[in-house]
Image (tube, rainbow, N blue to C red):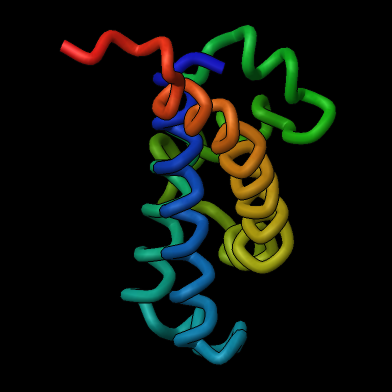
Length: 131
């Protein structure tokens, strides 16, 4: 995985965590989500950022992980936020926040965990130039 993909995955994970925190602040209450524009906008902006970041992932990475993550749907959601936010169904945003985002966060956690040993090996390699 290239370093740009890893950086984007870390940012996507961070936005997933922000969404989880917002949902927890709502005490998983759909009613509060519907009536509190600050929460709705906060969660929505994080989802839009996730979509934006996913667009920048390499085609190689997206192709290799397409069975685990539906990158096209994430991009589509981003486009809906960017172009038709005012008419989006809040039900769709809420369902995504409580069902899809936790899965995406687990995916990111797994990718980060899998690459951590490789990164440590490179950093700790005795063959590094010690100048």
